[in-house]
Image (cartoon, rainbow, N blue to C red; front, side, top):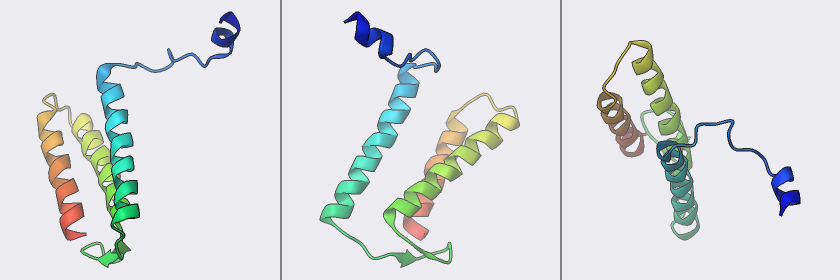
Length: 100
């Protein structure tokens, strides 16, 4: 067993808290759900407010990028209560999936 431990990649380079694990677990779960939806309920790209055809995966990606920008903006403005950017990110994601 010592040989395996010597070759294993150390995980102490990142702060693996339950929040971090939950975030990555949620992203992984969403990707699994999107893959299953694409396999069992394929869709045609649709044109929305973005002005170009998008699929579920495209809208999910834009939602993730938008969420990152919302949180970066919030952190740059010195915000302390994280429920405001969470609410803004959820509203942004709902708008992306409904309107885009």
